[in-house]
Length: 154
Image 1: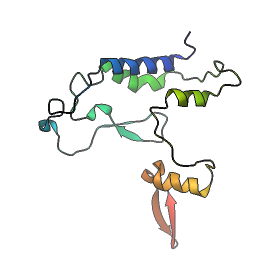
Image 2 (image 1 turned 90 degrees about the horizontal axis):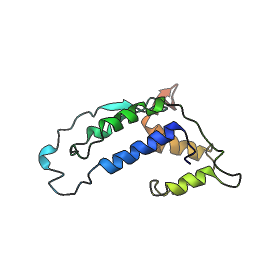
Image 3 (image 1 turned 90 degrees about the vertical axis):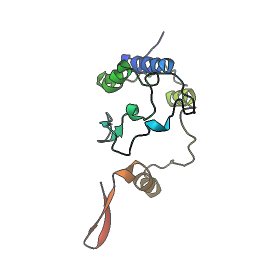
């Protein structure tokens, strides 16, 4: 039995559909012809649901995707609308001595890079500096000078 909600099932099945449908490209000129390189320009973007007004380029903005490598209309529709489904956490499938986070990290260990930083104190000055100056905050933080003092603002 698959103890999860519709959101998780649909997301998983759509991802599997995309993996099984797509052709694996080679690295030669057959799949990456120079004639398909487009001039530099702005990519179409879409907003990420549940994010702080962050827009990212669409996955289908690649230059070398052929029809067999493109995601299907169904996959794109699910990617666009899946956030509208109700999402719920189910921790009743884990016993008291099992850790859900460790389970997920073990299952998806190949997808995540090795973390080399120590974030044990997420409220420290060092953690704030890392987040604001080197992480996601670097794209959202500006510096202003007020009364001769340099301040960082969002």
